[in-house]
Amino acid sequence: MKDFSGKLAVITGGGTGMGRELARQLIAEGCDVAICDVIEDNMLETRRICEAEAPQGRVISAFHCDVADEDNVLAWRDFVKQTHQRGYVNLLFNNAGIGGGGSFINDTRENWDRTFNICWYGVYYTSRAFLPLLLAADEAHLINTSSVNGFWASLGPKSSHTAYSAAKFAVKGFSEALINDFRNHAPHVKVSVVMPGHIGTDIGINSQYILGRKRAADMTDEDLGIAREQMGMFGLPVDKMSLEDIRQAIAMQGVAFRENAPTTAAEAAKMMIDGVREERWRILLGDDAKRLDQAVRKDPENAYEESFMAEAWGRDSALGD
Image (tube, rainbow, N blue to C red; front, top):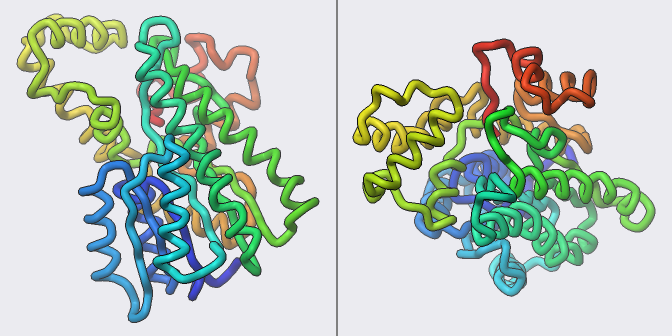
């Protein structure tokens, strides 16, 4: 699929980050776009931006949807068919995701399951729902966002990262298995698995909201004390920080993750779209993702040892997901 003009693209998690940038770039190329998001205000802002930027005649629709709820996803599919008046979809970007449920032992099952269900079942339910529309197109492409944590289940030796990593491994395996499935039964449909490194998005901020966690401003002294202990476990110099310092540091985490990323959301979206044009089934986003992929392949047996991060990245480097 070299030309996106007149095509219909469906994007989950279209409210911010890579989802918003995919919508902007695709509609600029003459594509019609259908987005969904669980945070309605973000989604409506994406629609407003795209409508202001869209070439004449292009259509963008928005639907409030929790992709972890299959009934929600099916309702969105029906909305897309009715709104866009098409019996097919050309591009499906399974982009929605959150971070959370780090520890299988210490985190609540509610947070663990919520993270896993969005990151894995969101991909599965949406793929199931829209598959007949992909099959009905003359040409189609399914793009599933995994992560570097889909081939390396860690954020480093001091951090647990189980729910997100388990889901992203599932997304990667599902996508790879579809390569032959599509070749055998629907050769006009392509599939790609996307593995971002540290991309400048609001995933940290949005995840806190979706998991119902307290904002920094609402945290009690007890909450802040626990947070200080956790930050200390990561080697952060918290001994001389007041509780108010801790509060400010927590408030800035999500912003810092977005602003300090080596790859912007816009750059990542372009890499994804270019990968679709080139029909690459495996799309690594960012030099950090490429370096980590090489390091894990070179020495998989030691990928979870404390020395691995220093070897792969250098002692002053860190990876976000």
